[in-house]
Image 1: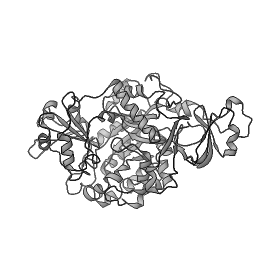
Image 2 (image 1 turned 90 degrees about the horizontal axis):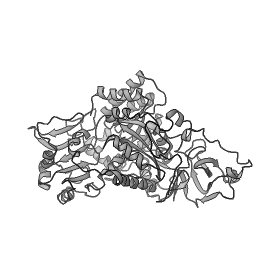
Image 3 (image 1 turned 60 degrees about the vertical axis):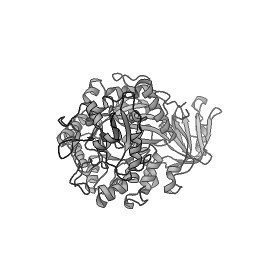
Length: 575
């Protein structure tokens, strides 16, 4: 099993371990371990418990980028250097790990994913990968089994990159599934489609007003089309859907954690705790992330439950080094591929610019409140107009309550102009890019949705780095697969899956920069760079062994590098 220091055990929101100030002084609130003198006469109880040698070591520590050896004691790195320097730390009981030519890196980090999506594991898969054409989608829906409550549920639909670009109107869905309620969720999580039976089951008709920050779309005659936009519009329907709870939910999350560890991940950052079942989501995660967890877990709480979080007595930094909550997640708009991302100019061939989910004033109030309370904020913004609104909200909050080291983030931050990058740099904001957009949706954005000018500034990694911003790369799981080496490859190559062309070569970045975006810079964004993200003295020995060196293989082969072992706090993760 894989154990980590500082286990969660049953966290009590009112009696959690030290908050941000204490936690950031070093692992578990302690003074960071100093680099020992390799020539000193160490007592037997001071010997390294593990000495790693025998292959390239990429530390991602700017002060010592490469090393020959790493020494570990009590789950933490106590020294990094040459074999000759560190041999003095080895004793008779020191375990030795021979890399045998393999490459050692800090454990990989996904800074933006959603554990709540494990609820969809048994929904019918109608993704472009599983059902590549419109007829495949229709066949899968027509033959889909119903749940115990009679619902037919499907996920991962994406008309923007499915051949034939199928349109799921209420009439189409009624023909496919006429006698049972049907709900089809798009892969972006912002759009769903329902048939007439589902509308009846939910009690929604053409006279039902749109919910706050959501829309029941209507045709020119005012009739419901069956398209639902944003989570609040889905609420009336999800009340009747059976979600797993208790041990079943715990098992699904554990499976996700072990899947991540198999991809070399040692930390996940959940950008939406509470999005499915409010405060119960937090309790479920607390029950799951225990001493057997193969990864550390950080997260942001949904802003829509802010009052409830405060009533629970939560505060920034609640938790410990294995499970900690530091942030609040808010949303400004929807999805660019779904046409709901809020743009400065209309989408190609339409008069629509998408829309904000909240007014600029409402978003500013959310940001102001959480910022004043000391939280880090991550605000979802895909369209360039949504990014404008988000930057404005941060600017107002920082003017009213100046605060250093806030580490506020813009999530996805997709269509990003040079002047917006300048504003972000001035305010100390950083972007986390859903880099899979380039691979799977790049051509759709360029040719069918946004056009070449806006697509040229999509996920502009190189421009952001040149401006001095720290960036990270993420999956938004389950929007794209959880596999950080693939994020690295996508940022380095920017090759589009559809057609194989490169989307704006000027925004490609080097391999080391891309590795930083899934290690030390991602750790910084997750407020965990004091304990993980690089191989340096004082940090936990959260490590990954790769069969090949990503700095040496051809960039289009990076995602194919096999993960040999993942270590959390110096212990090999094996289920």
